[in-house]
Every structure is written in structure tokens, then in C-alpha cells.
Image 1 (cartoon, each protein chain N blue to C red):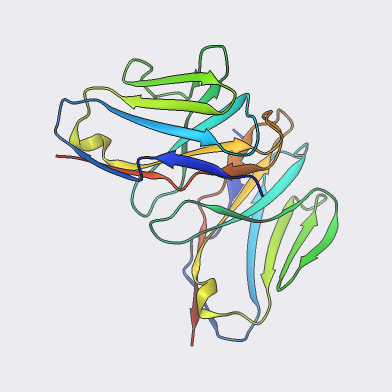
Image 2 (tube, each protein chain N blue to C red):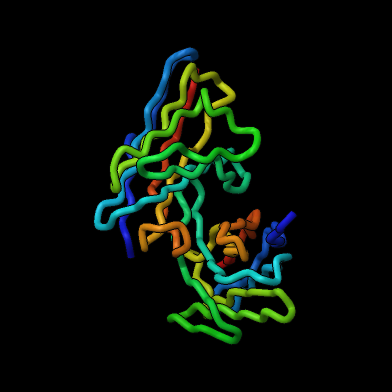
Length: 110
Length: 117
């Protein structure tokens, strides 16, 4: 069964520090990789997507993909209390099915 | 990004009644939409894939006759929870791929919180 694994957390990071969120996936043929943020009681919102190996930066966010290691991460620089949320990793597998991780709860401490 | 709306945002109903939830893609057409359910402090669970002009595809364990899906147009999918019971109380979220097909980035509606008394 295809899986996407995330540490459930909570991950606690001081304000201003770098938060690092990790995700591993089982299907080596996976095509696309997404990071969503979900605040409590709200629906997920897309932060970033990445298709190619390497880094992709957007503002304070950097997605990193390593297909050889089947690993995708999200770095949040200069963490703010408003970044406190659950971060969901989603992977589109070789059958174009979107597989969701269970999410990592991130807490930014002022 | 693409905009997806849902209506209603919140509904409270009595046990045994049916509830219809609408999902609309506002600025793009979607031949495929997805319906998710999320219980408190749990992850998203895909319930079904809604296909315009054809039958929905349900995930294992989801009752087709209880969760009726109709994808009547390229911008509207509806989920009807029939004979709702308290255990159906949950957060229901729809999503649609930005390209309209099934392989692109998904954008989520704001969700519908259903409470069955």
C-alpha cells in the first residue's frame, strides 16, 4: 500500500527560528509533491508544490525534494506565531492518485 | 489560485434527515472534484471522486447509498448525506484540481461542518 509518512508532532520552534517539516513516501514513481497548511477548524490551503529534485523557494518557504531518498521537506524561515498550524504533505503517485500524510502539528513559540 | 466555494459552511440537523452540501469551482471548470471528511484531530480522509457526467468513484468503506454524489455540471458537485446520524458529524471538504482534470494541484473549498443531533 502506498504511504506518505509524517511525524505527527507537535513540533515546537521558537519564533524567528527555522522550522523543518519532513515527509517520506513509498512510491518511487511519484510525480508531484505538495505542502498544505491547515489551521484548526479550517480547510487546507496550498503553500507550495514541487516536481523536480532540489530546492524551490517562495518567500519564507523552501520545499526540498530528494527523489532518490523519497523524501520531501518544507523549511519555514523566520518562523512566526501565525505559522502555527498543521502541515500536510501530499504526494501524487505513479497512478495520479493523491496520497495524503497525516500532518505535522507545528507550534511557534513567541 | 483557483477558487472553490462550499455551501453551507455549517449545518446542524436532526438525526434521520438528509443534508446537501454544494461545492462550486468559481473561476474554472472541473471535470473532477474530490470529497473529503475530517474528524477532529484526524487527517483528511478521501471519501469519493466526483466525475462530471458519470458516476462517482467511492473509496473503500464509504457507503454509496448514504453519501450521494452528483456532479451535474463542470462547476458544481453536490454531496448529500442521507438519513444522517450523530456519527456522521464531521468536517466535509471538497477540492478541485486547478486544471479541471484530476492530475493537477488541488484547491480546497472552505469546508462544511455538519453536526447531527
